[in-house]
Image (cartoon, rainbow, N blue to C red; front, top):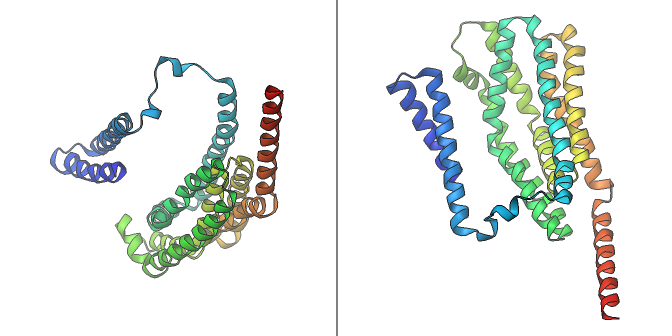
Length: 297
């Protein structure tokens, strides 16, 4: 509810700052900051009222070495992963630039269209990390498997509907972002939107499987997945664009999505993570029972 309120407020403030106060780009920036800050204040107030277990004082600010170490073990690979994705985008930009401003603009339009057409299912995939994490902590491993099957069906159903938009309405989407008479720009923007629309199931699956693995604390395969995706995009862009022009760049991201799915799916289905988790729980229980026996003796 707070996020919905934040988004609506952001839209209203954007219009107010730009149209009524003539604040331009600065106004748009302030609209974002104000709406986000209000969301933070509301969240903190809600926690203060509803969740006393999340309250903390001075005694809770001491560093816990074990928790810190575990936290960094999860955070560092994700940090490197996001850095790699950023470097990958810069690499692709370097490949695109020689094609000229129209192609660069077409890439920008296609990227914005991707954000627009994926909004329907991206949050479904991200939220699964919460589901898998909660059930992994509760040691309900079969529920994670059942949830993953259900989420896959749900997400792919939403994707099937989402694909209609880029495949059937690419010209209209492109015209939302640019007003130009450049046939080259519009043709390439439409082509990129349609190609990415065709491969949306690949994007949905890479997001879903990586969210699942992050939730259960298996960060390494998600890191490998991101590296495969990034390297694939750069290599495919550089390899195909000299022969088939910008189309090779438009194909790079979708192929990267498909290839990036492989490490995560392999780990989920073939690494035996569930069996290892059960064995670890049994060892922990056996150790606890042994301690109890020793104390009783």
